[in-house]
Length: 450
Image (cartoon, rainbow, N blue to C red; front, side, top):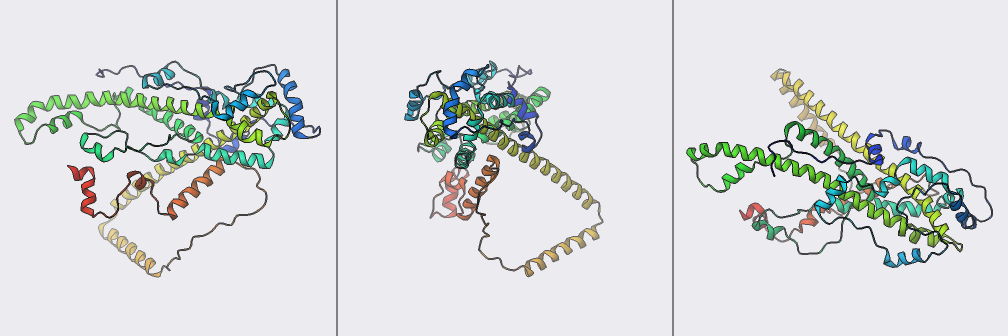
């Protein structure tokens, strides 16, 4: 692959929903203000009976196509196809199996249904088109709470963040790192995916600008030429070193340029692949899960396919709103933390400069004073008990349930549990053997094999 000149770099295609996620800098509360509120429902007997009675007429009155893209249904009363899906007959969407196929999706600007469904205008369009009774169904306390609890696990997957070595570097390390155990399929949760897509878009934008300016990425530090020649010589010779100097530098630069372009394309590949995974998850959610887990167990009337479609669309409105708010909360926390880290680093550098400008005698006095204060603090510190503080849980009804808050609570609980049990995910991944001496453990490592 020739990279001596800056070659064409594939542009990342962004849908309207992705552009909104990049540009919107308000809080979750500000985002909530963009959603339309359903009109007040006029009660006509039982709510469930009202939903069943109005579903078909409301569907026939709609002047526009439904804005829940990817929903599979037929315009008749029969519900047999919905029942068959719950029996494991639902086929998820096929996604490309090769890198070339994934890159073609981005090149051809393929639109994904889940991103179209997350657009504010489509969410609000669905609010206007549906009968108000369908929205009230999902506001029932037990149904809403069970739905949000399901979305917590569906949106967050801690196991996806346990990093694993993809391929061993050579035959010597292959036997140590390779594991023949079959693993379950691991993918990001839905909100995890939205957040990682946002970070990838930021990184792709930065990497593209850097390659266009310098033809290589500063993050790639491997010197191919130096590595190659050092691997095939076991002594020092100034004559040989001078002979290969120009070639070594040329290989270092050309391979860095080539690897930088591959790394850039890999970022786009990740972005497209995550969208494919989220498309599959969302497709199964609206076509199987909502009906199987929430409509079928909770709807207490005989119903037609029109009722299922109406309730699924109403549920998707709530789900889409909660997903966007949860994503925005996580994005804002991450941006705030990045800015705070940058500010702290600047402050530390400023303090170091001030400290360097002080006279030596004054600096020594301050250092001694700080050490004495620390010793006095440790001497006066009372021993802490091993008891962990318990947070009182208030009983009673919960108001304003929010997916972002539930995800945050679930993450904190998982971290607290891991800390109490003294479990490290990295240690579990490596499968450290017990009963070995330090010398024996070292021999098990890559450095011990050299």
